[in-house]
Amino acid sequence: MNTAALVIVACAAVLFILRMLRGPALADRVISSDGFISTVVIAVTIASVRADSGVVEGTVLVVALGGFVGTAVLARFIERRGS
Amino acid sequence: MGGFFDTVGGLFMISGALFALLAGIGVHKFRDPYSRMHAAAKSPTLGLVLVAIGAGLVARSLGAVLTLVLVVVLQLLTSPVATHLAARAVHMRVRVPQDGPDELEVDESR
Image (cartoon, rainbow over all chains, first blue to last red):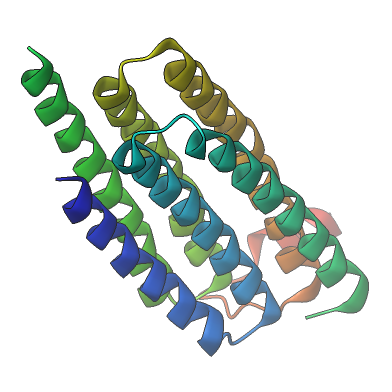
């Protein structure tokens, strides 16, 4: 059952990456990278249950925080530089 | 009893994963940055909440549940802020084709 959930999340990640590659504006790439990071958080949560160890759950926190900082920085970059 | 919790947790995780897939389809299909943002921001958050509930039901340990609660609270706090920043950047810098008059611009010029 965990494997099925992981496969579904992988399909979602592929769709986000396709939008990231196609653009067209830089803002579209930033938005889809934000959604992609959320998808990675979901995937690591499922994987932590699959691995059945307490170590992996700390990773979820780090990825979530890093994703927020990354999106904020990229948004500031677009405001400064233009699309 | 343990098997029952595992099954329910697995179902929660699959429904959360389906919400992530919905977000991916939306980001891929929608036609301008604002509607893509709408898809990319909200449904992965609900998906993460469902997956965290499922993971807590499967793991059933205090440390795991506390970490998952922390993750969900963090995501609920940071996801709207990040999307707001992205929307602000799009409004300031990207020309989005509109069906009618741009209502935001009409409001600002008043």
